[in-house]
Length: 196
Ligand SMILES: CC(C)(COP(=O)(O)OP(=O)(O)OC[C@H]1O[C@@H](n2cnc3c(N)ncnc32)[C@H](O)[C@@H]1OP(=O)(O)O)[C@@H](O)C(=O)NCCC(=O)NCCS
Image 1 (cartoon, protein in one colour):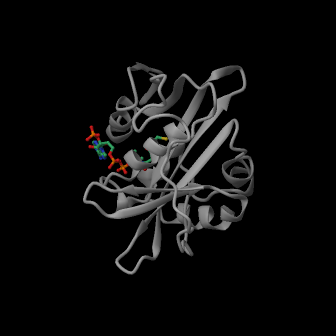
Image 2: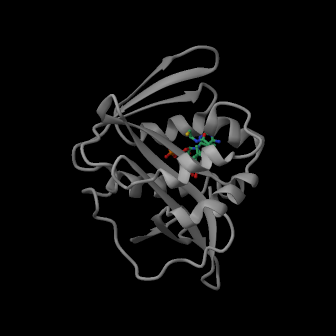
Image 3: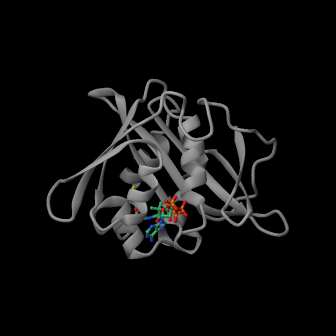
């Protein structure tokens, strides 16, 4: 299932569900990230994704409690260049709440990739999710800006350089409309390289 998207400058992009076959692409995409981006994503220094982490990030995506999508930017000749991944994971002990994580390869940051991913993620979010509960580093202005756009947000200190963040989601599926309402295209992007 694919959706079309546009970055801030009008560049075309495609978004699709992450699949088990994307495991190596996720591993390779991670290798492209700066140390700062890795730290902001995982709240720790992570030199490489381990097989256990990849099991969680790729193989455990079930489309029900764990939804993950990837975005490729289409270059001038229509080739897909992987740019970012977003995911939402339902908490087992809080069935109407989910963690959210977005990672954009450094060279594509500040171009609207996360905004496009989150718009689509809201439409595909696990059924029954009413709020997002996550932790970010206190200096992660980009993440806080991104989360605040999704709905009323409360951020509270949670230790050194940590904020616990709760976002109440609008009942209509958030920016872009009802869950599942994303526009579909027929072809998968030629994303031969790497995603994360
Ligand atoms: C956070 C992140 C996903 C944002 O991705 P992005 O594609 O650059 O974001 P966008 O271009 O869609 O911008 C989203 C918002 O963040 C703001 N933003 C982006 N980068 C920013 C920065 N470095 N400083 C301040 N604000 C920033 C944008 O202005 C925009 O806010 P607005 O809608 O109020 O204008 C990206 O910086 C990233 O991958 N960071 C490392 C991993 C991470 O922190 N993930 C989030 C926690 S899991």
